[in-house]
Length: 570
Image (cartoon, rainbow, N blue to C red; front, top):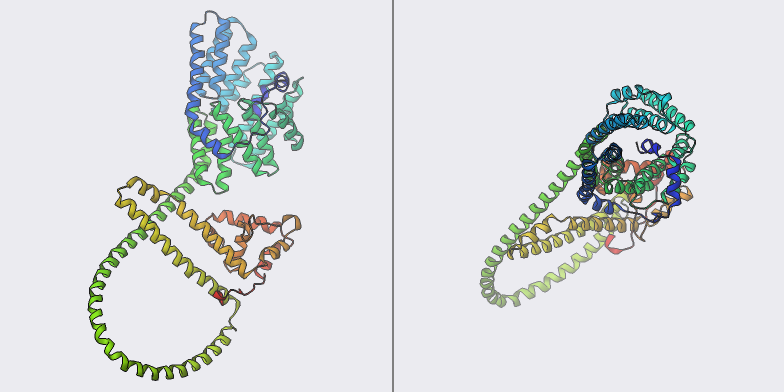
């Protein structure tokens, strides 16, 4: 874990960090798009990192004394520790041989602990415990003991994450805290990492956050330590349920990890889980796949286990999303084909009608002779029609009186039916225009442009947005006081204000559908094009913010409506 790895940094290192004057990242707020670009360039960063490793290896091959060999094997170990664990183990073993050869007892103990650290990251807990228990702790210096206790803390944190039962998790957490306390009592100069971890363990999140943010503000944006600190800050915000800041600092941590070629990380995986819960399945899938690829390249079995535990769920959702997109594309193509067939039929029919028009013209000349006689008959019929119209007017009056007695539900349905018919007519016109544009592209042989248009989701997204805009407009005509009445049911500080006049937010749209009688989460999710879990989360969250949670939704269903004044809805 980041918070355990960093315990090896002592207070002296922290003092050096805060007394420097690097560019502050206080106002650096990278977005998911920035992270996407960094991930796309990850191969570039890895190649640059491999070049640094290659240079260190060349220096090692030219080393002429054991002191230089010890320094270079130590450097290569730490470079590979975050990149490829198998290679890190190889250089730890070589470092151990050099340290033993020159009789550097403290370096021997540090290296034996390095090997234990690799075993922990590799998920070989039994071998790691055996390695740690084989060491003579009383003979260790304070620096070695600091590393020793921090590894025990990391070991039990890893075992807690892979434990199956709550009792096991609680037991390993107890052991982890015990070793953290031992580490805290041991050190005379406390590092920022240890101080923050101690406060976080005792639920003093505000104090821990203050320490970490202070250190964060004094880091350069390219610093490797930024990944550790940003992750620790995100972890504390997670404890207080501030999801937006959790995402913000996980993005920063993930960018730092990838730019520094760290493959044994947590940030990107945790960010993928949050995005999946928010409905961004595409990004969640890509981030989780990237996490699995890096963990596999690093051979970090614990990280592979963590990713494999979640990836099948996101993978299934991603496949479902892509299948839905393919179905929509198939339906769109089918509609285009049908329209093309209709167009051919219309052309054929028009040609046939033109031939009939000429025949009809000649017949029309003959028919003009009989028009005079027919006009006299029509005058008589007009008199009868006038009488009939008076009777129809009386009948229409009685019909209007009868219609006035219809219930609220029928009036609302009539309004939405009229809008739906208008929307259908508009959509047919748009499809015709879209068909014409595709036909022009096909006729011009612009196959790639035609394929790009067919592949684009812009028309679907625009239609969805226009559909929601029409829904909001019609609903607010029927229920003009819906927003104010709805907010009156919430606590004053929890009121919801739509971003635009005459529009509804997603939360308001969910309850608008419920007011119209659509109360099932599955039906609401289908209408709003989101997941059922998202609808459930919104309903639960809004209900808890209301003045009367137990009767809140019934109160929404009783919000009064007002008949539209526009004549087209009468």
